[in-house]
Image (cartoon, rainbow, N blue to C red; front, top):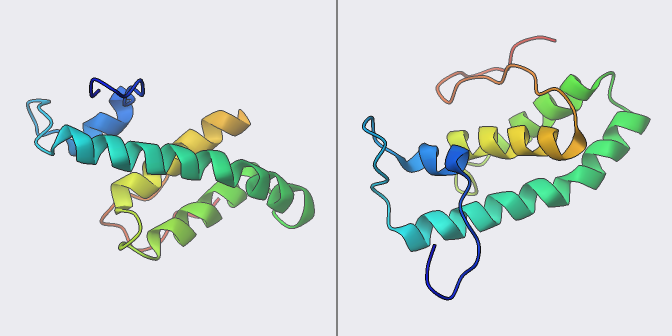
Length: 112
């Protein structure tokens, strides 16, 4: 956290940028900016997820897996690890159980 900034990076997000010993190797300002972006994105997706669930999707897990696939489609926007974090955070915000998400190296999500 920088001196003029009151935002604290969630430990689960900081872990995306940590090495095996737990040290964050990316500059704090960059981690903080990525965290703000991902947190805002998760918050922004809440309403969209609710609409999809009530209109089209067969399940909460289906909505979350679909959003995960969409977020992973463009690695210029989010890394695979960040996409997973955003979907897990979205599930928390919705108070939904997060399904097993594909690992960053996996090509296709598991079937629900």
